[in-house]
Image (cartoon, rainbow, N blue to C red; front, side, top):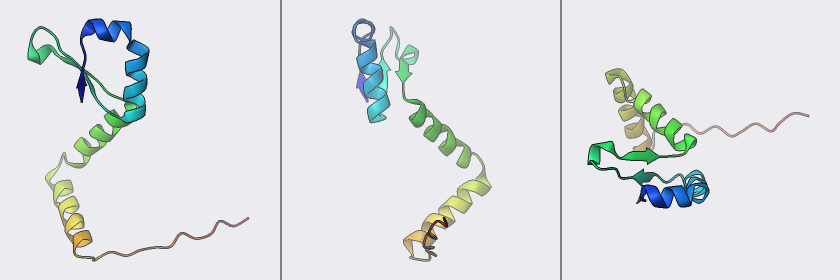
Amino acid sequence: MKAVTISSLRKNLKEYLDKVSQSLDVLIIPRNKDDEAVVILSLKEYNALTETAHLLSTKANRERLTASIHQYRQGDVISYAAEPEKE
Protein backbone atom coordinates (compact mmCIF):
# COMPACT_ATOMS: atom_id res chain seq x y z
CA MET A 1 0.00 0.00 0.00
CA LYS A 2 1.15 3.45 -0.81
CA ALA A 3 -0.32 6.73 0.41
CA VAL A 4 -0.17 9.88 -1.69
CA THR A 5 -1.49 13.37 -1.19
CA ILE A 6 -4.33 14.73 -3.27
CA SER A 7 -1.91 17.26 -4.80
CA SER A 8 0.47 14.52 -5.88
CA LEU A 9 -2.42 12.46 -7.24
CA ARG A 10 -3.64 15.41 -9.31
CA LYS A 11 -0.19 16.01 -10.79
CA ASN A 12 0.53 12.35 -11.58
CA LEU A 13 -2.88 10.73 -11.96
CA LYS A 14 -2.03 8.61 -15.03
CA GLU A 15 1.23 7.39 -13.49
CA TYR A 16 -0.50 6.35 -10.26
CA LEU A 17 -3.36 4.63 -12.07
CA ASP A 18 -0.89 2.76 -14.29
CA LYS A 19 1.06 1.57 -11.23
CA VAL A 20 -2.11 0.41 -9.45
CA SER A 21 -3.29 -1.47 -12.55
CA GLN A 22 0.06 -3.16 -13.17
CA SER A 23 1.04 -4.01 -9.61
CA LEU A 24 -2.37 -4.83 -8.10
CA ASP A 25 -1.29 -2.58 -5.24
CA VAL A 26 -3.62 -0.25 -3.37
CA LEU A 27 -3.29 3.52 -3.36
CA ILE A 28 -4.52 5.45 -0.32
CA ILE A 29 -5.39 9.14 -0.47
CA PRO A 30 -5.59 10.53 3.08
CA ARG A 31 -8.21 13.17 3.84
CA ASN A 32 -8.80 15.44 6.83
CA LYS A 33 -10.07 12.56 8.96
CA ASP A 34 -8.86 8.96 8.83
CA ASP A 35 -12.33 7.63 8.09
CA GLU A 36 -12.59 9.94 5.07
CA ALA A 37 -9.55 8.48 3.30
CA VAL A 38 -10.06 7.12 -0.21
CA VAL A 39 -8.63 3.90 -1.65
CA ILE A 40 -7.89 3.29 -5.32
CA LEU A 41 -7.44 -0.30 -6.46
CA SER A 42 -7.53 -2.16 -9.76
CA LEU A 43 -10.69 -3.84 -10.98
CA LYS A 44 -8.91 -7.20 -10.81
CA GLU A 45 -8.07 -6.66 -7.12
CA TYR A 46 -11.60 -5.41 -6.39
CA ASN A 47 -13.12 -8.50 -8.03
CA ALA A 48 -10.82 -10.79 -6.03
CA LEU A 49 -11.86 -9.10 -2.78
CA THR A 50 -15.56 -9.29 -3.55
CA GLU A 51 -15.28 -12.94 -4.58
CA THR A 52 -13.47 -13.76 -1.34
CA ALA A 53 -16.13 -11.90 0.65
CA HIS A 54 -18.84 -13.88 -1.16
CA LEU A 55 -17.11 -17.22 -0.56
CA LEU A 56 -16.76 -16.45 3.15
CA SER A 57 -20.24 -14.95 3.53
CA THR A 58 -21.96 -18.06 4.84
CA LYS A 59 -21.03 -20.51 7.55
CA ALA A 60 -21.53 -23.47 5.18
CA ASN A 61 -19.10 -22.02 2.63
CA ARG A 62 -16.50 -21.26 5.32
CA GLU A 63 -16.75 -24.83 6.62
CA ARG A 64 -16.39 -26.32 3.10
CA LEU A 65 -13.37 -24.15 2.37
CA THR A 66 -11.75 -25.02 5.70
CA ALA A 67 -12.32 -28.73 5.06
CA SER A 68 -10.88 -28.44 1.55
CA ILE A 69 -7.77 -26.66 2.81
CA HIS A 70 -7.32 -29.34 5.46
CA GLN A 71 -7.64 -32.10 2.83
CA TYR A 72 -5.12 -30.36 0.59
CA ARG A 73 -2.61 -29.98 3.42
CA GLN A 74 -3.01 -33.68 4.25
CA GLY A 75 -2.29 -34.59 0.63
CA ASP A 76 -5.80 -35.88 0.08
CA VAL A 77 -6.12 -34.55 -3.47
CA ILE A 78 -6.99 -35.90 -6.89
CA SER A 79 -4.96 -34.61 -9.81
CA TYR A 80 -6.33 -34.63 -13.32
CA ALA A 81 -4.08 -34.33 -16.35
CA ALA A 82 -5.34 -31.95 -18.97
CA GLU A 83 -6.58 -33.71 -22.06
CA PRO A 84 -4.91 -32.68 -25.31
CA GLU A 85 -7.05 -30.53 -27.55
CA LYS A 86 -8.62 -32.29 -30.53
CA GLU A 87 -8.12 -30.75 -33.93
